[in-house]
Image (cartoon, rainbow, N blue to C red; front, side, top):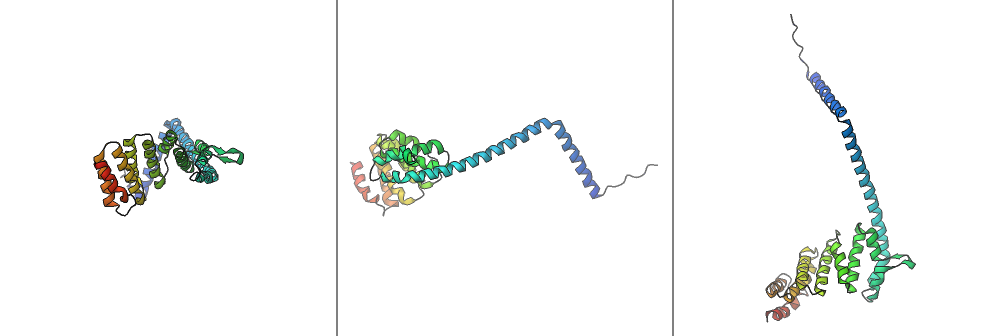
Length: 234
């Protein structure tokens, strides 16, 4: 006579399930050992690469910040003597001062290197090298909202200087939307409206002039609005 099958306890059932799962995992591992080892090795390589990249980026950022600090006083002197902008671009190797162009070339992928890119673009703009300025304003990719909006406005200034008023207006308007400090928005809008007018889109120009008057009545830009409206309405 057959004995009744012993009923498993919850603990025994749990252990049995674990043993079964372990057996399945072990079997899967040995059947796919080669591919699993490849995957693990690949993951380790990726992790190591990320660590190396992060450490290099941090080191490059510190070097760029140091070099930018050395050359910034020369760049700043360009506001009173434009010749200083070229010196800031080239640097002064004899004094151990790396120029903005070299900082960007060597450390441009770091945050501080990207700030140097903005100042390099602005230096080119002040020297009338609009193509050089455009190249670096467009490449600027910093997290600073104020600099980002200024870079867009810089693109507008370059296009205006090159006589492409439609592109200039579009970028000035984009800068007005992007700028975190809204006190700068009316000036960007004024430039956008003025360039739309020069591009022949007087309706768009007048619309923006009126917007400045309505939204920013106390701004310095608002004081010039009526004059421009009269100019582009005639």
